[in-house]
Image (cartoon, rainbow, N blue to C red):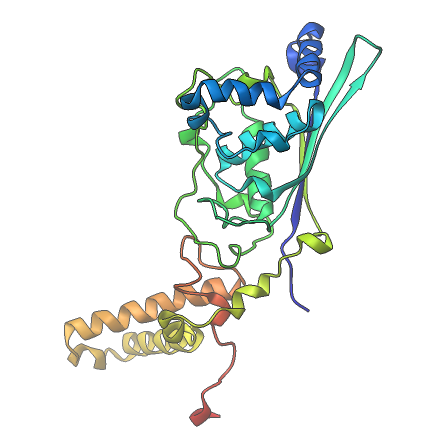
Length: 313
């Protein structure tokens, strides 16, 4: 049975404690959410096209946004997606719920969504990251001290966010050093929550979950791709690195290196092939793609686990 990528369920809850125990600030945010009208926002951007161009909402179809809680929640996640440089369509089942203590006093606001590995029509730079990678990265960002502006240069992607050791998503270009994008770099806002009047987000939580039937993406889909030229070279990485290790060991023991009689350029090429084969073998052993190397260049799913050469069978 093929393995599948996990979805990621994300949620955070705002209470009066997240507003320096200022009940008025929480109540004012609730009022802003309830009064949210996408048509007014659309009209504002229509009159200020440059403001829309330099915001994370340039791809938003405001005509499809609902009023109140639902529309406001989607708009907030649009900001997150722009910052993480992923497709907003990967955030589904978004929900923003307000709990009231009484008619005029708010108790909490909870925002939640599911991050999936599908709905990627035109890949954004970081769409190759799995939902688990994206979810853990977002959790780390939201736990940033709220009294300080986000330092985007220090909040880049870390490999430890990939807690499930998942490969990059199939058929998505892999980039080096995934970074955050400041969606408000040309606006007056200095904090991710400032636009939404949020001071803090202490009750942040998230976890990897089994995908639903319509969000399932198979990890083994990477093996469906045809072999690239380098895949033909490195599909025998286990064998090449084994032979290389034995040869180097014997040459050290007996003090004789037959390869020393070969041209320096040829010798350098052989060493590069053996060294690269060792790296490919290591990643194949741990069943993960080579970070920052596109699977269209070297795909560890194509590394042969047994002899498949007809003349050696």
